[in-house]
Length: 261
Image (cartoon, rainbow, N blue to C red; front, top):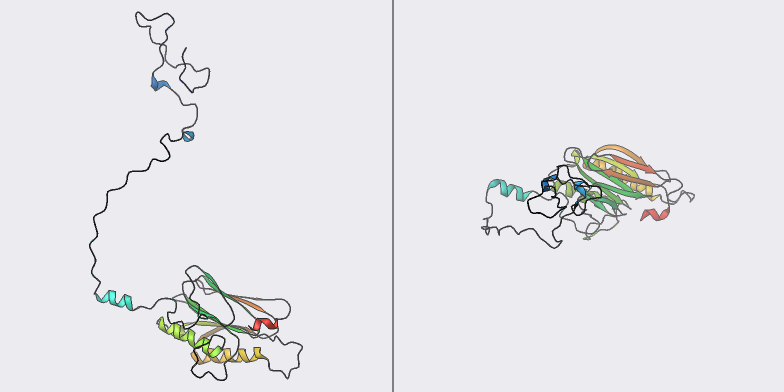
């Protein structure tokens, strides 16, 4: 009996063979109808038989779009006047803009304020970091300064290495976002004594940075929430902008002098 190609041995039709037509040769057997074929493997294993280079038909070309006139409504004008979330007035590379979804790491002398990044993080020795967070708008900021202030600034541009200039730039950025310093929760960290074991007569830069941090928070009216300063240990500080949670981890051993910058 003839078997359909590709089916395993032992196949038998489910219908009785059709009667032999008159005049057919002896031994003729009718093949079963095609509807009686049964697949011998799951349908999910079958592969498409069309060539790989076949492509779907291209959609009909869309009609050309008419040029849209610029919006002149009051709502459009108001939307255009809203400043970007991250400061657009950065005068130097030390004012980091960040990218959406980024975990931004601040080096000594750098700052950031905005709401696009995921988190801000820095490592402190005798330097001081001030973190800011707006609970309603989820705007977060951090600065990492090395010295309280410079003795003679003259007409030099702002420099994030100095506490008074770094915080002043943060205030300028948050004001551009239509917020006020008193809207922000502030944390103060750092100011380790990296000169441990040295004569106390030597000026402790960490203490001076701490004093400047306290003064700046009070001057601008931030809501001080937490402080961890002093000692002689390094600190790692991170701020998550979506929640406002500030995590601070103290290192082991003494803060190295190179962490001052």
